[in-house]
Image (cartoon, rainbow over all chains, first blue to last red; front, side):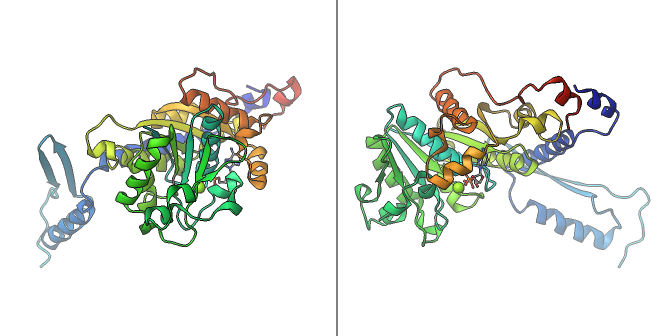
Length: 90
Length: 269
Ligand SMILES: Nc1ncnc2c1ncn2[C@@H]1O[C@H](COP(=O)(O)OP(=O)(O)O)[C@@H](O)[C@H]1O
Ligand SMILES: [Mg+2]
């Protein structure tokens, strides 16, 4: 380490470190969604739209999980409803 | 039976064609009968890097469509006896690459060559998937840069699911990492992902690190694969890469910046 680097060492993280951390998150996400049916994001959107017709849920209230085991595929749907049910919107 | 090697990356401009030319020349120089195929239909440039662009008569698509036979289309390298180039078509669109057609040509080449090097186009579309479909080995060319590393990882996903070996449940494609356009000075000051960073993310066998080098442009200006420039850092690192591919153990070079004197260390950056 050079002398000047020593004085710089209390500066923010290097850009290479930022790049590495961003990549680790990105790649983990890419890998998790790899091999999933391509209709999944749209399915998630449409289910969310239907639910929001009746219940005032957050945009991230619906999660769709896809898993493949040897001979079967599992589609897991998770919907988080608000604590205090709000009045139906229609 | 030939071994089929795909040079792939996802991202464009990372050094696939430079690498294909270097690898093919390096293998041929070691006496391996080698053919290098340009899969970049519509944007051919392997012939330029190999310096044989004025000798192109027929191309890969002509052979697939049986408008010419392989002997008519293959261009023999003038510098090296065992090396042949199969150029891409400049005019057709990439749908002309059919799985059956590509398979037929590779089968025929397999009879008389030891290695078939497939220079993939960028992207993850048809041309790129055709270049990797029949591969036995894949060299994933990556630059130390976020979008290139991400694309390489996506390419690895495709290699493990959409290749002939994957579909037939054969032994998977052997995957290697080649890090190119590496700038050791910038890595040292934390401005560029290091070889360790990239390996940690992609976890592949490291085939080599090719430095960012002026020699690459000079070589392409002259139509001479950079591996023939033995004086240059890039040429030497490509020669090491070929040795490693053939199973020799060669220490990595050009990963660390040259040691500088006290004063420049003091004022570095
Ligand atoms: N190690 C390197 N150092 C400097 N320039 C390089 C290096 N590798 C490739 N290049 C340059 O980058 C550009 C793209 O290279 P190319 O091999 O055509 O990439 P690709 O086939 O992946 O699109 C070219 O201009 C080439 O000269
Ligand atoms: Mg190219």
